[in-house]
Length: 184
Image (cartoon, rainbow, N blue to C red; front, side, top):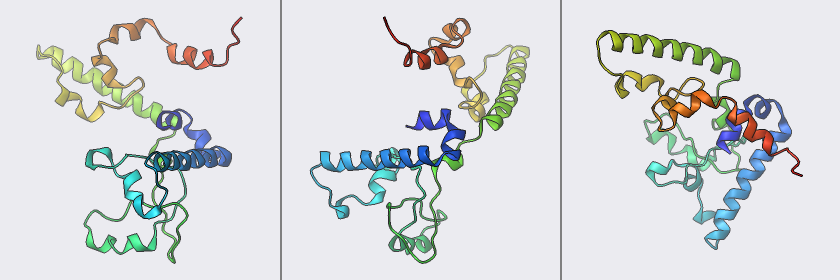
């Protein structure tokens, strides 16, 4: 779901039906997990189970819905120094109507992504020139700030099949359109 949201970023933000569909699918996934564990009791599945990152024991789900933070969770906000609650339960309300951040608020529009990509690749070219002038190789520390940025991502240069990328341009578009081809 994440990858689809990144590719269709403008459509997700500007199309209420698509956003509703994503929220519906998010709820179906949660229901399927609950059924798989043979219980749909809300007390056994607090929001933290679904939305906490995998690194600290959650399922690492990301949300696309406009969901309110439960009033009961806000009491913990004053006790943390993290700046607030980011996990929530769909359908709950409270007096202040505080919304949690949604995934699409953190995804850049394509125009900004292209501008950032040009900047990142220009920085990469400069760093590579400097490394060549000093007769050394680029290290991960040199590229740490731009590792997951640019189109294509800078980290693709360090993958095993990086030479294939130079010859097979447009493969993603071809694979997407294969889904719509009629086979004889």
